[in-house]
Image (cartoon, rainbow, N blue to C red; front, side):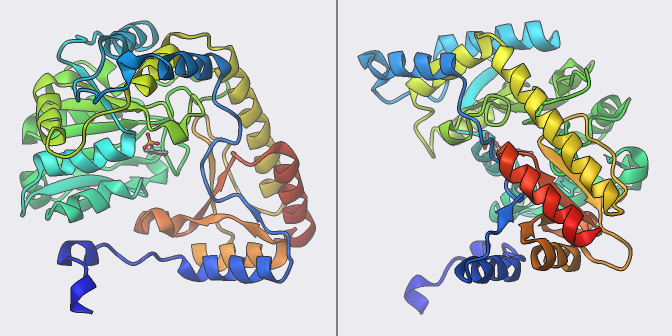
Length: 389
Ligand SMILES: *Cc1c(COP(=O)(O)O)cnc(C)c1O
């Protein structure tokens, strides 16, 4: 009906490709089959107690109950400044180089509106978080995919980007530790990206959703620790995954002051900022003890080993990731991403995500999330062994 016809912009978003898989899961569940989903990356443990306590106190403070400012509370900006200094060795001016975001997703989406005009290009990691391509499209611009090459440690081949695309590029979206591949940043990549960005005047947006979720002693750097990064880039730091805060919508953008000022200007026209109690809780998260976070990482590492072991037993060649909450693995020979995921669902009543869901370069892979409770994950792994070996 014309009355409810969506905009061309909205219609340009590709249809959701996995409706068919979801329909099959739904049908199985209706038939009484106990389907275990390893599809979604959403921590299964509670937000750490000191964060909840800070929130409790902040909710009762009338000083948090008015409209927040998009600039954010001093406590929030100071906490980020201290965290970036201690954790990453990065100096952040709390006055100009950090403001809150209502989750990384909001921030990444709006950066496209702050920086892209029709005809402009955003370079987007492929496979990658869907907003890297959806944002530019909804903003009336284009995205050009940067295939992450397994042989390069899931780095993009920067030499292979067409000159024509580089000339029109205004943004580049990168993410390490990487969702969905689990890769950590290959040596020298951030340095080469800074160089490319300088040469072609591209604003780099590093999506830092997983720096605190790493294993085997690996410590993830901030993109902003790269020499020259602040001149050409911003980093979006989300508390969602590392601090078990997905529902709280708490993130920040840090780095280039002029870029942050443009994002701020856009946001003053769109939303009214991040609830101040959440800002105070976020500040408490960053300043607080790390024991729970380390414990959470130990849980994920254990689950990772369980999953990797089972996959190897069923003939899947997989490397254990050193970061993120995902195991990314190639499908067995003769399968596509979708056909293998359908087979796993049929045989084992387990849902794994087809890699092609995250972009064309994800074809030939599947993703398993480690955020399923231990007993359910163990059951899923048993089923893979029993039905697919
Ligand atoms: C989960 C995730 C996000 C979402 O972060 P929010 O702060 O919850 O919006 C962003 N980027 C990547 C790569 C993610 O995996």
